[in-house]
Each structure stands twice: as structure tokens, then as C-alpha cells.
Length: 543
Image (cartoon, rainbow, N blue to C red; front, side, top):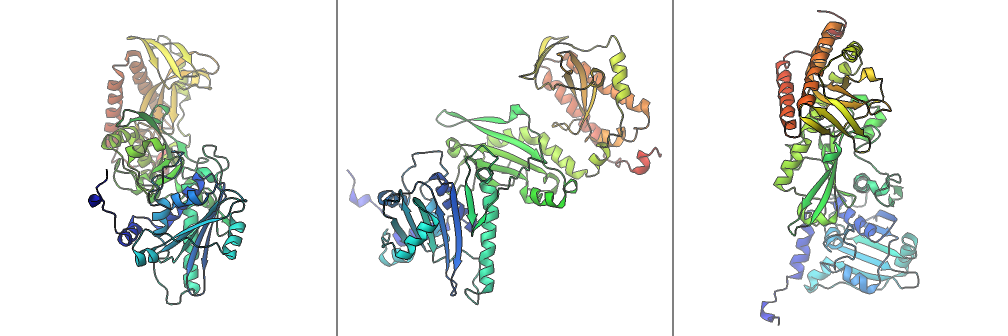
């Protein structure tokens, strides 16, 4: 039985005003209202900004979702509303509507109905009224003819309309001429800022070609919000291998759920047209993690403790990180759904996975001239490929079988039968697969061994991938491009190292060989640090 002397209800006036300062800004507050519309099944959402001649600002959100009857509306307006039936919905704590609204205004009113044959339900929270009575008391006022007409115009047969009034926190300053041109322009800028924010936050919902989420149409002051995908799939390169794209996480209750991750390196600005640069929006603050909860972006940019602060040399790298509502507690998602925290163990894991890609993005930025030099196809490896193909008695592993579905190849080497993973199929001539220059290697190393199933057959060839972005290629190979013997000599050396590794590796020795390659590649980079990139004279055969 409850002891009345121990019931200690909060002071209504102080708490309802204190909840205005939970960390929302205007964009995150508006997005919380839009979240509710999406959770209610809406596929059309409109936001409208109005201001009268005296500077009173009103923001209206309208949707065609399921709507609520009077009882449901009463529950939704409670601070700490009941848990939603659909736990995967974008709503979370039952506070968003209230804390988001009050962070911007001192009065917010919700109108809703479930069908055209029902009356419009209406309830309001007015902070000034709560202060006056010092009770958690809402206002139930009749729906005026003007309000009903506006509801019919914006919502239609069913749905919800949220109206913010007494908006004392919508703009960052007060204006000497309330309602004048300067204040009106500031309000228009606020609407434009919200449009840009929503274009990112809901890009999967706004993009009709993205089938991961259902489609919605969102307008702000009558202008449709168009999706902005931060990963610019038409121009970027997804560089995270498949085995690292799924991250199982165990919760305290023993349940295991997966987060997923992909990594994209965008082109350098100089490789894009002016229009494409506007789409890519390459900037320091845009690098890093884009965290998605149930398909909605809740965090954009920055490294969240996995790496240091943002800096120019990694501005091309963006990480797509996805999780569902089941992992909310694991990531400590806040009430605004705009903050996430990684567990230290997860930070370490992500750093280990992403370090090579982070390093590669750094290299691409630092060496703007590097790929222009190495990517031009000036180095001819055909003689090396031909001679390797014609050399009998080569010591290398014997390929036994290849499974195109799994990308696994089985080889016979000195250690026995070994299964190799992530083997790429090559459609080039069998005599051209031995030396394979590639734009970059995720490890950042100079080379890595490779087995290639050639063309339409399962015949396996031993090859070596050489990293064009490594200093050794851009500073040594490129200078030697007109000296066939030098090119062949370097090619033979790297192929021989790769063949020896493949002929002697197994599951236990694989990490050792990887460490050796990394150490060799790092030492070469350090030795070549003082050697400049080749200039035109170097590339044209000069001394």
C-alpha cells in the first residue's frame, strides 16, 4: 500500500519549464515532431512557418497519419506517454512531442482525429497557465471554425496537426522591428535550415529509389524536401570488405543483435564538377560516422572517440552505421535521438576495422598529385606478365577449386590444403593476371598476394596486387616507367614474395605474413618520405 507521506510529486511550474532545456535546437525539435508523424504511418507531412505584423510566430506541422481519438490524444499529451505498440517506431521515450515543443514555444496545441466521421480532438499545454495554477493541467478548448477549416485543408480526413505558439525560442535574437523584413528573412532562413536538416535525417524515406524505408513526402512552406544522401553513391567508393560489415553486439540480458557498417571514400573536390561538389559537400565537419537508428539519421559527422577530432586529411571518409531499436540501451540513445555513445570495447573494435581505411583516406587527401601520377596508366606491366606466364617450374601453390558464390578458393601448398577467402574472379587474359596494379589496398600496404580464377574457368593463377597509392609506386615505379628492366625487376620481386607467402601460409601463419607485409610497407614509406613526387621532367625520362 502506498504511503502518502512518501509521495513527492514534482513542482509543475518548475519542472515543465526545466524540461525546456533538455538540449534541443530548433531542427532537432522539429524532427521529433516529424518522427511522430512517420511513426503514425503518415506518407505526407507538411511544416508551415507564419508570422503576423507584430512578430508573433506560429509553426504548424500536419500529417495524414493514423490520427488519434480524444482518449489517445490525452495519453499522448502525458509527459512520459505509454509505450508504443510498435517498438521499432521512431518515437522512443514518450517525451519527444512535449519536450521538443516546449524547447521552442510556451504553448503547443495538438489536433487529431482517426476518421472523417469523428470530431477533431484538441488539447494544449500552455506553460503560462501551468505557472498560474502550478498544476499539470492541460487546456481543453473548443475547436473554432477557423481551426477546423485549417485542419481540413492541411490534414484531410484523418491525421494530426501540431501548432506551436508563443514561440519565444525559435530565433536566436530579438528584432527592433517585430514582424519586419529582417525578422521575416530570419524566419525564412530557419525554414531553409530545417529543410537541409531533414534532407539528411530522412534521406532514406525521401528517396523513392531507396527501398530500405517506405516513402514519405515532406514539404516545408510548400517546398518539397529532396533527399540528400551523404554517401553520394554515384561517385563514392564503398571500401569496407563484407566480413566487417556486420557487427554482432551482446546485450546485458544475453541477447545478440547486429549493427551494420559500410565505409565510403568520396572523390576529391578537383575530380568533381561544380554541381557535383554541391552534392558531395566535402568538408571537415562532414567526415566520420553517420549513425542511423531504424533508418533515420540520428548523428552526422565526427569520430565519436574512435579516432581523434575531425581534420582535413580524412575529409573524404564517411561511415554508414546502422542499428535497430533493440540496441538503444547499448548505444545510450538520448531523448532527442541525436546523441549516441560507443562502449570502449566497441570503440577499439571499430578502430581496428576502420584504421586501414582511415589511413587510405588520409593518404588520398595528403597526396593530391599522387593518384594523378599513378592513375594515368604510364607503367606497363605487360612484359612482366608475359615472362611470368612463360616461365616453367615456378614455385607457387597449386589451385584446386574455386566457388564463385562464396568467393573461396582451395589451394594445395607446402602446408597442405588451404582455403582462401574473398578471391576475386578475373575476366582478363590468363597471361595478364600475375601483376595487378590497383588504385589502393584497404590495408595501405604496398602489395598483397592474390589468387585469380581466370575468365570462365576455375583455373587459378597466383598473382600480386600492387598498391598504386603507396609511395613506392608513385615515387619509384613512376620514375622508372620508361626503364623496362627496372619495372620487370620490381614486378618479379613482388610477385615472388606473394607466391612464397601463398605457398607457405595457413590459418595460423596468415597473421604473421600480414605483419611482415605491413612492416615492409611502412619501412619503405619512411625511407621514401624525403623523396618528392616525380615532376614532369622525371616522368619524361629526365634525371
